[in-house]
Image 1 (cartoon, rainbow, N blue to C red):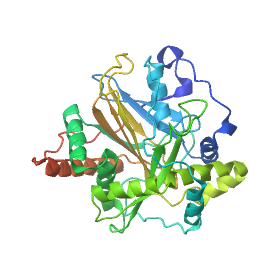
Image 2: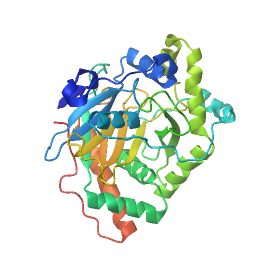
Image 3: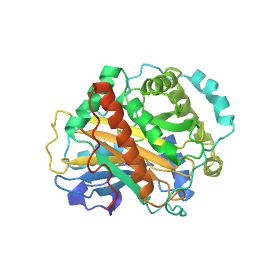
Image 4: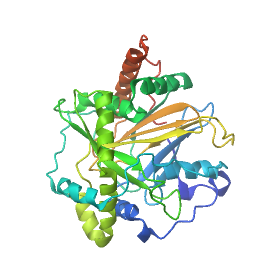
Length: 364
């Protein structure tokens, strides 16, 4: 597995480091600083498959300095891409302190962890300087990516809802009680309504979504948009900023006690969206397939990341080492995920499902 930390890459490849603002102005960064101090690896995982390559070059950007959209933009810009305006928040709900007041009881509610069935491999103590080794990935070709877009548009659901529903079903066989509600953290990009000194800095809040065993993609879609309509993402944004009143030790204590979020999460599901569908980026260092996955933490051990670049959708899964260090676990989930996507896709489009010949990629 080829790995590079962004601050260790040679200038001819990725250019000079970006100028970072004062960390004290970034309330999100302070929580990732605390997590790193607790031994968590807080690097956002990116992978680049240049044309003809079968093994990705893995690149990690610390969540202290970037969020997912910002990190991806940084990597493309370092290859010469012109990206004058990053993706913006489209939901009309405005910031409101009332949303925070309504959300306060959720921060005090008991935490309910989901118990896992026996998993392959062995757990290992996590460390803040080694990325997770349990990783799997897949890139859909342009034809299947287009079919996913068309099917979701025809059904009136977002690609996020479609993917999250099938991801949850793919992981259920590994849960002790397969009828459990599965809790996810779904990041929300706030660019357009929140402006920082640097457009690649942390502009991300989240909504907490529980996916039930009987729910359809339409149900998941409704759950996500109900949370957005209630302003849950603004409540969580305000809650993180209230952390500026805390000492670093208090932040570490809240993370350890799993009180740094509104619920315990099985994982984070993050989609960076659709990039350059018109193929205007022609710089050699940008071309090829791109992978992305959010960090995993003890309080949310599964990371699921998606990004569509030049009309090819990629999926990446990783697992916290204290759950397992074996890539066979995310590989099985990925296989199930792709299968569920294809079954539903065929049903929606009135076709016969055909499974990919090589549906699973492991780290090389």
